Image 1 (cartoon, protein in one colour):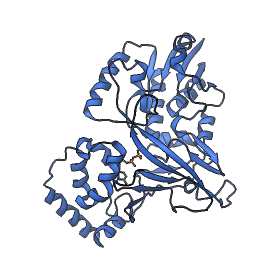
Image 2 (image 1 turned 60 degrees about the vertical axis):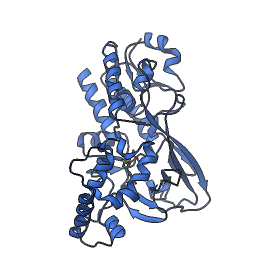
Image 3 (image 1 turned 90 degrees about the vertical axis):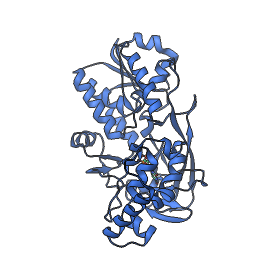
Image 4 (image 1 turned 45 degrees about the vertical axis):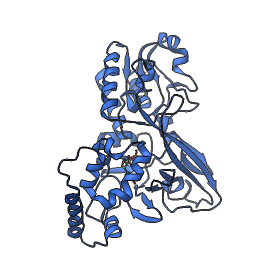
Length: 370
Ligand code: UDP
């Protein structure tokens, strides 16, 4: 009999497992995939740590979380600066003076601010009610049309008018020449890959991979006093109230026999015609070098195709709009009857959490348990 069964060996599960083990509890972690680390899983290909379920750049303002992850990995100095490719025109991201200069030829911050204000006024937006209005009121119509509209519609499979404004507020808008995609005090990639970091978190913890919780639910639950479930909340209840919507991503990975494909870790394709949303060139998360500092002769790229989730796909992004919000609340009510189960993480709580938020909520949860 274990004190805790943890379903899912991603970040939420791994942090809970570490904290509970250190508090003297017996823990069993299971994951349906043949490996640990959930969607932050990295795999070494041609000497490059490939982010197999999409690019993950660790960034946080939370000192406690930053100190916490340092226990399990050394982070490199990677700073995320994606490039937007609109029909062959390249723009700097996030939206900053380089972007405004390329878009409008403006040179000073005042000129850029005036241009945004002018376009916002023309659009007649006072209180933005959706992603489109929010975007235009932040950066004007030109940038919305070229750098946001197409990308967002591909990413979410919905019109910008039908999406919540908060999604675009994730991106900074700056009247400075700062290409750092995040407004975070701390940022980097774990040297040696995320898998190694999660492996360190799980050291000394019993982990069984390739175990499907739902295939053995009764047996597994009989093995533990309490359960921490990090899978999709609607799946736990067998979709009894209906499906929550998720976006899924398909990755087309390619090994190229050249040292440099696009010169940057991430290039976003912001037009509607290009079928992929972005191309990740993984070696640039580690400056194109192996751990000994040697240049790598080959490169690995991943094209990301976004799609509506259907049963059997991997869920990546919860669609946090009103309709799904209501359905989630209904599922949340059901969890109150499951007193021996804790639901947590991006899928367990149906929230668009970043990695640092997942770690913070896991740590808080365990503090409460303690
Ligand atoms: N976005 C955009 N153009 C871009 C990059 C992002 O319009 O080139 C919008 C898009 O709606 C996206 C949101 O900004 O969903 C948040 O982007 P972020 O990079 O934070 O998403 P992530 O890839 O981290 O999930």
